[in-house]
Image (tube, rainbow over all chains, first blue to last red; front, side, top):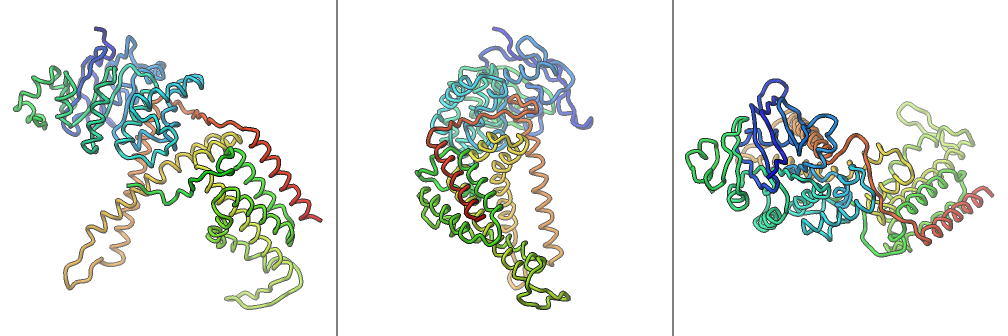
Length: 236
Length: 263
């Protein structure tokens, strides 16, 4: 299997003080569905912001075959779709249609293609009838799914999700889990929802204090209760 | 929780609702411009303008008096024009002392004041119908089609999107304060005015910081989806025959109003 994303020895500190990432390395293969877990402040969100070049630390982030540089940022952002935690941050346009069309439009696609992509992205998250709705009238669960559609419309090769199940009621959470399971795309999902991890992801990366402390089969990692407790996590 | 007290759109199926937003925005602007250009005391033209308004009300199926009932909120703003009562030279009507000024109302000043109030009252009504029959994003699209600079339309679109989020934030803050504003039996609650002012100040600061941080996150979300500093939008609107005909008809009527106003 080919690597679609590899991170090598990544260091980053905010304002040269707090070291958020202290040498992070890992790889994602095509089709991988990987969970990223760790306590608050472990550096998960910081890491995610590096994967499409919003933050740039020391070290290499390679997407596909290319190292992220200033010049290939647009191409990288088309390949790596990041869905942020709060859907109110992710959905910044007045209507659902405009939000889902934002990515494709900025990729410079022709209008017919944009329309087709909006339709298929909304269909993929099962929200086809919501095109003309206003974002602020949606429920949290609906917003989360639309947020995923805003990135799917760019046809990314890798989907990065930050806390997708936070704040969802059981039904919305179940719908989201089914959705993530059915999406045929490489994904890295940061979450505190250990049940979700157990159910959905064969592989897990554990981060703590800016380091990857474990990377392997979910089953093995979740079995080691002592290790989980050491890193502020809990057995599901 | 949703907070949409600002949304003035009234869902309905009507001729005016179906019109392209571009038509509605253009005609509204033309109507407001026409009101501004009508000479003082053009009573016939003012009346005809009002009839025009009533017709638009009728065609919007919101009720003939829809805009009339909502128009008075804007009247206080017309009071800014109150100075013309005294500043336009003409025959004095009455004189009185206000604080340490000796003010004289002139007939020409009175005429102009009444005309200004009527003009603004008519204009506001048209704007009320516009926002009542057009969804806000469509108004922004229409402005884009009218070549309003994209930086302005973008700001308006963001304002609209985040006004609700901000309002929700304010209500959460207020509720959090309320929940902790308890009192011990027998003693007065609330603290001193200074203390309360400080709490309110802190809340305003909180709101500012939260908004500021949110703007950062929104910007990141925009970058992630390929934003490079130039906003692209797609306004999927198409003008049909009925739109052209209505625009032409409305503009002709407005022109006739102008002619009548100047006879």
